[in-house]
Image (cartoon, rainbow, N blue to C red; front, side, top):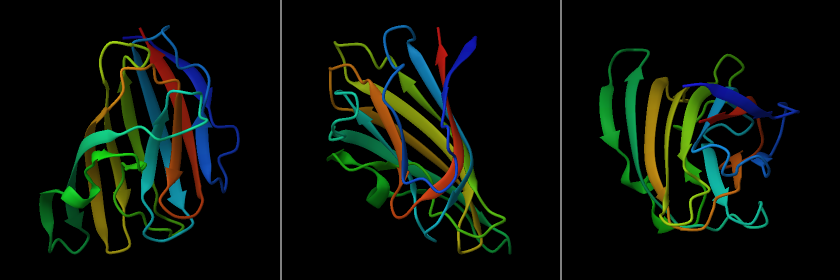
Length: 178
């Protein structure tokens, strides 16, 4: 599996969102997004993703998803796996949360991967998966898994990463896989 680097956010400091509005086309059947050192300005914000079929003019596609989180505290008093119904979507057009609640301390951040499958296909709905590891303000280390379906048969040609509140720092890279 050869990955080709297609995009990297040019300014990774204090941004409201990072939109990739070109380069998602039929060249690749799989796009992989990797993000590193995601640190939020607003304590408790979630890292999110959203999708577009009109080059980023609108991010209003329905998503059906399931959100799971595996958590463990520094004090070793909680270790759990939980399906978080409130962060799963059932056709909503809101951005999909793909991280746990992020801590804005200088020594914490989130990192992860999102896979977008066959975004240029025009027959079926599109599927994505993500895994994000992060620390939150309650002393938890979280590993969040989200599997989802984007409810459109139209080609996805733009992806936007942002947070549920405020700005963020971090590096985001997009790869194509043939």
